[in-house]
Length: 369
Image 1 (cartoon, rainbow, N blue to C red):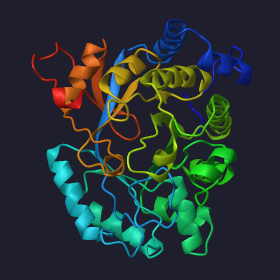
Image 2: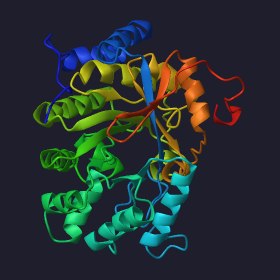
Image 3: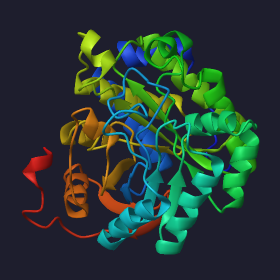
Image 4: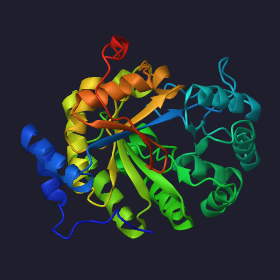
């Protein structure tokens, strides 16, 4: 299924070269190289974004990742599980505001089974048939397989049979067992996360690939993460994009023990290195939401061609104290001010509409700066 996500004919960047790029190459040189690679792949100067909503059907999670402030134990006062109709109503409200995609995720809730997943999908489809349903991360699929005493492929096939064709790539964090044992010891391990993605690609799903950095990982771990993604993409071609973000310490167990802070420049460097190392990935995302506007715009000049989502609802980062809101007009303005043409896309990265023309005055809301 590997079509245009193919690597170029020239020699690939190896591990030592990738490390040099991440750690030692001057920022200007690195950004220039990455931007050149981006323009070779996407010469039209479009920067895409998606108008989406991210409701969580439950915040109950027994996995207890140490970087998460969102999850609750079943007996906690603010633990919740929404009904399928409640989720569908939230999605319909977001669709009325313009959302075209719902990214549906929750915790690892032992009282949620496959029949519940199907009920959520069906309720959304009945209430809001026009919206694209983009549900359940690889780690959730593994947990569901254990819940159902089944295998991951069977769960994936059941969701595929329901008409779902894309999967968000959450739960990758850093693909290093040393790191995962410290930050998420009860979650899918490195090999399991990759195996779920590979099985999904073989079935016909398109997935994203993510990375959460800025906690206990080393620069070597970041490079290993990218190389593992590249190796899997060589085999399947099923990754649509790479999406990095930094750890948000907020009210998290991990954040309370770390003294480390990560400068936004590291975000730009990771985007640039990803564009050069992930030579078989079509799309690299830079985001106003996960960092800040300045870093997001610099990412667009460092190899990224996508600017993430205009979120109607988002809960996980908000619980960690990272809360941002914006509008389509604001995102279009931010993209234009970086020198690109904004374009709205869907979850397959197909362009829905392009916004040509000059930037209107007075559209950028300072509240998201």
